[in-house]
Amino acid sequence: MSKISKSLYLPLSAAFSVVGGLVAGKVFSVLWERIDDSGEGPPDPKDLNRSGGQALLAAGVQGLVFGLVRAAVDRAGARSYRAVAHENPV
Image (cartoon, rainbow, N blue to C red; front, side, top):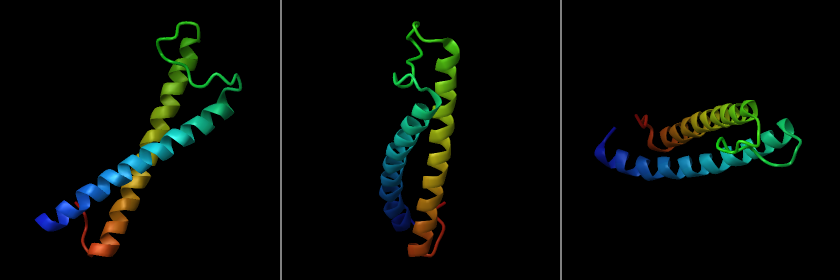
């Protein structure tokens, strides 16, 4: 990857990451509403009034969603870059 090409990809990658974070947050919120029907939202791990199992489940689901969305967005960004620049962004 050339220096110019890298300097073009870095801002694009950052923008894709921000969008991916927003999408992942929304997906997690919708998914958590389906998992927990209490309407209280995901528990804060420091909130001792909610169960520990529920806090761990929320953390696991959140990590899974963010990891999957990040990988999908990074992959889509790399493919888009390759389609435009005709070289891999790595």
